[in-house]
Image (cartoon, rainbow, N blue to C red; front, side, top):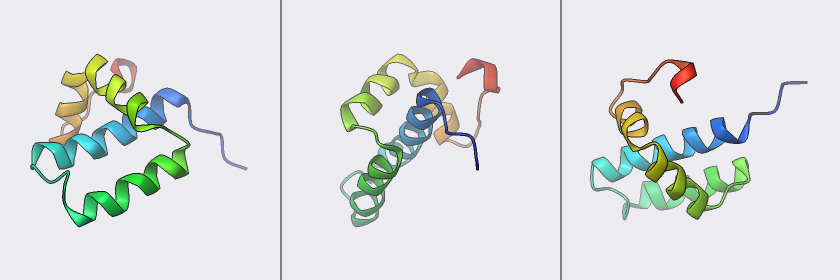
Length: 75
């Protein structure tokens, strides 16, 4: 059986997904409204926790959302 993802990794993934839509101005798009709630559900996260993660790690999240991910130790 696979190892469960750490909360930090779950938040990072959800934050990068959300930021990728935000940077394109697509948070109101049908694609975002369909995909993002499912990701939150599957990862057992709340949107406010993702927003806090974005606020605390904005530079790394934006960099990853633009396609340039930081080294694992800097997440």
